[in-house]
Structure formats: structure tokens, C-alpha cells
Length: 79
Image (cartoon, rainbow, N blue to C red):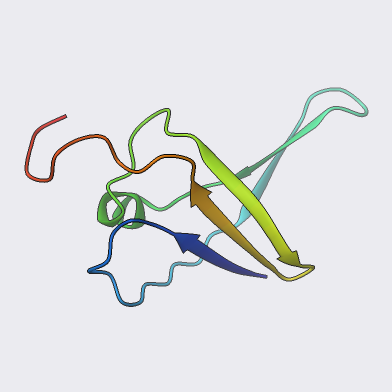
């Protein structure tokens, strides 16, 4: 499965990180799936806690994660 992240960071040409899908089983039919974003990738994309993302399914093996809004902080400022 490939993962493409659409971002407003134009200076990143290519980055790849492997991650595993995690599942938490809560009862017989209640499962939650987690896909962890590695810290170096989140930092390079200037992602922030609580940022809203949209998952777009391209086909069975390809999906994109898009920001609903771009990063709000000014580059170089502290959060």
C-alpha cells in the first residue's frame, strides 16, 4: 500500500518512511485502526496537534492524506 501526503511544503521533493498499521480491539466487534506518522515526517510537513486531515482513496493500494487547511503558524515562529 502506498501513501502520498499532499502538503503545502514545496521544498520537500521526496521522502519515504515505513510504518505499520496498529489495531486496538475494544470488545468483540469494536476495533480502531491507527496509522502513525513518524516524527521526522510530521516535522518536515510542519504538522500540528489537532490538525484536520482528509483521507482520499485512489485505489485499493494507494491513498492520499490531505490537509484540510494549510499550516497556521509562521515559519520560524515557535508554537
